[in-house]
Amino acid sequence: MDELDARLLTTMRAHPRIGLTELARLLGVARGTVQARVEKLTTRGVITDFGPTVEPARVGYPILAFVWLQIAQGRLTESVEALHTIPEILEVHGTSGQHDLLCRVVAKSTEHLQEIIATVLASPAVQRTDSTIALSTQIPFRIEPLLNTAATP
Image 1 (cartoon, rainbow, N blue to C red):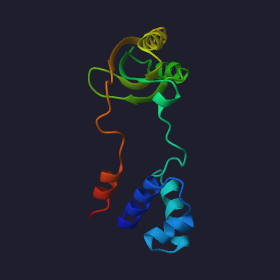
Image 2 (tube, rainbow, N blue to C red; image 1 turned 135 degrees about the horizontal axis):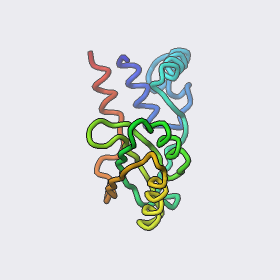
Image 3 (cartoon, rainbow, N blue to C red; image 1 turned 180 degrees about the vertical axis):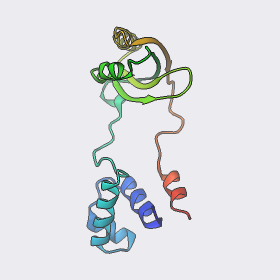
């Protein structure tokens, strides 16, 4: 990752609907260079999508919770398969420490969140949950500071 890659990614994030020609103009490089860089970054898995970012609260899911799960020994795959069927679970991360998985969950209400957690606990692979409801977002997802740091030698 060099300085041009970082500028390219930062500009794409700032202008998500930008075309390659305009991107090249803003960066001061040839269109072919931009296209090659985007293809390289996509192939390497640095760029993972080109879709719009959707705000769950704006589509009827204002509750954001982080739910920790303890999984029965040897049943991780089974638990992840069960979690995959629940649309309100946006992300699941394997973790170290006291808990095995961390889930990012959205819900229509606290009652709905309770129903989701009950569904999670219905899986015999899940032994215990521990939930925290987010009251506000102090720093939304960001990548630009990391890109700027990663581009420096």
